[in-house]
Length: 83
Image (cartoon, rainbow, N blue to C red; front, side):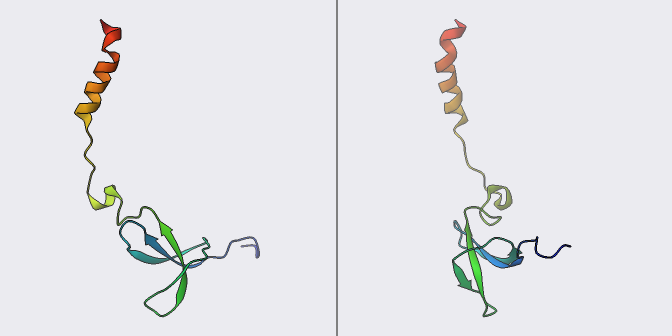
């Protein structure tokens, strides 16, 4: 690899805004916020909106959608054109 052309790859803590869970990994992202980790070191902190701890695909929770209301609203809106 050529020296001087790659970004700094360093440890970073990511925190899920919804659940508050944190995990330490490596990234090129920079942050002004810091957090002290369990090993006693201080790492940059990046707060994310969704992670595997809160995403419906990974948690198995699904949102209920009012599909019946949507269908009725569609039929009311466009029923006039089909008569």
